[in-house]
Structures are given as structure tokens and as C-alpha cells.
Image (tube, rainbow, N blue to C red; front, side):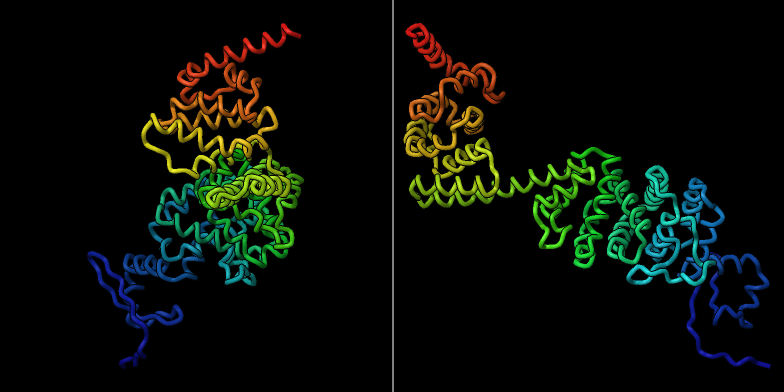
Length: 444
């Protein structure tokens, strides 16, 4: 009697020595599968291919292997290494990483798909591990080995971590902590890029305080692996250095709030880093505005008033402002390319702005900062090499620089750039200053 066959989806398994077309429904074998059943080798090949292309079978195989390996992470790493040739890691990378982190496949939003069936879950995962740095670091090594072995998983793992960070609300506090530690360790050893942190800027995570709390734990783990300079460098490369305030709701996005929150959490290095970054941003804006005002030839009094207001509002030191003023003043002119003419042009231009510089060089440190800026500028712009001494003398006569500052610069506070050339230029003037000082003392 011939069995009637319904139309069902076909799939083809190809081998160098075998091509089998079979039909399957709900794992019940039909008459055309008898050949497979009675031929163990062909059956093994069929099941092997079946594991590759079915997500539930992929999950079951992975869970079983992890349960058999247990808490032996070396055994886990070996299992994942060898199983990659049998399971399709490329196709089911999200399932692979879901299970390694959470012990189960995750639905959109982060809930466990198999929460009601413990046979489809494993307790041998990051979320079930002990909440200590060393244990989580050992789990991080499992991910490192897996991704080194299967390089194509690198991008998939990055996407997975971004996704898991979006799902933070679905995880318990201890699970969030372990994920933060894992992320920080993997950021520290270079397995993950800092760009994954963009997921933390999601509104819902920020409003509920999850983003900031998670970030603190992550940065602590990261700094346990690398120093603060390495962390801040990675943040700059990912263009996240200017976005750290976004970890907090809009009404709390202030440098003071960030600094207190992170300092209280033991991360003063990050607080200091943010203050510096904000200050740099402020200085860039100030420089841009100053450049505009100088190009419009605004009265010196107006410029002084504006700069003083900005200094007070942004808590800027005079040493930083004097350097900005020098840069803006020198950028305001198109300089002559002939060395014999540029000195005269520079002196005429700087004489005009000497009163402005004098206002913001009222402290010894500010004077030294200006001298160093002038030295660096003359060295970096070769046409100004012979103009250095003339500029310093001009500033001395205009009460921008004091003799104390000039002598200190000459003896110990000069920078390395063009040192011998500029010290030689200044030798006679410095001798004159010293003699004048001695004469003044003898008269007293």
C-alpha cells in the first residue's frame, strides 16, 4: 500500500559522497527516513546537520554541553572550541551569547524564553556565577578564547553586549552587577570597544538611574584591569568623553553632580577627567568667540570685560586664558613670509594688544605661561625665530612681563623647544636686567 505524502518543506543535506533529500514533520520519521534510521553513519550526519540549522536544537546541544562541563571553565572553553565545527555559531551567535551570559535564550526586552522549563536553561553562565572580580574575570577568559578561535564572532559579540545593556531593566541587581563587571573586564583587555556604552544613554535607563549605577560598576572593573589614562583614552577614541553627563537625567547633567556621584563611588579619576574635558570644551568655545571679536576689532575694554565674565562663569584660571589670548592674537593676522619683515609686523601688531595681555598676566605663573607660549610659537614658526627677544622686550616695556618672570624663565622655566637659540638671544637682555637689579639694590 502506497503512503500518501503531504507537501512539506524539503531540505537537502550535501556531502562529497552523499546527497539525501528527506521530509520531516514534528520529529516523526516517515517511510523515506527508514534509510537514515537503518544506516547509523547517515543518521549521524543528518542529526549533525540538524543541530546546525535549528535554533532549539542548537540551544539544547549548547545547554547540555555547558551542564556537562559544569563549573570547570577550562572544560567549558574546550567544549565551545570543539563544538564550533558542529554548531553554526555564525547563524546563532545571539543564542550562543544569550546562553553564555544569561543561561537561556532571551526574548526582546531581556526576559528568558525558557524560564518555565529548567531543562532548556543552564546555571553555568555569567549570571549564575559568584559576584566577585576574579570569578567574572575567569568567565571573561572563556569569551576571549572563543572569539580568538572564531574571529567572525567579534562583531556579533559587540552587538550582543549592546543589546544586553539595552535590556538592563529586565535583569536583577546582582545580574546587572555581574554584567557590568564582565563588560569592564572585556573593555580592559580589548575584547570589546568602548562604543558599546552608547546603549547606556537610552532614556529609560537614564531616568531610572540604572545607567549611572551600571556605569560606576563597569568603570571600577575596567580600572581594576587598566589604569585611568587607558580608560579615558578609550573614551576619547569612541567620542564618549563629551557624553558622560548623559548618564544622568537632563536636570542633573552638571559637572558638579557628576563629580560628586563618581567621587563618592571611588572614581575620582573620572571626575577629574570630566572637569578637564569640560574645561577644554569651554576653552574652545572661548577661543572661537575671542577670535571672532578680534577679527571685528572690538575695543580692548569690551574684550577684557567679556573674558573676565567667562573666567568667572567657567572657573577658568588666568594661566589658561593668557595662552588662549596669545593664540587668538597671533591667529588674527596673515604674517609676512619674509623673515626680515615679519619681526617688524609682529611688534606693531602685539603693541596694539599688549594692554589686553597685561590685564591677564597679573600673576607670576601667568607670565611664565605666556613666555613659554611665545617660545613655542617662535620655534614652531621658523620666520619668528629671530623675533623672540624683541617680543619679550616689548612685553617687558609694556608691563606685560616682569623682570622676575623673565629671569625665572631664563634660569629654569623655559621649555625644550629652541632652548639654546632663545637663551642665546636673551643673554644680553638678561645681563642688563641683572645689572639693573644689582644697581637698584646697592642704591637702597
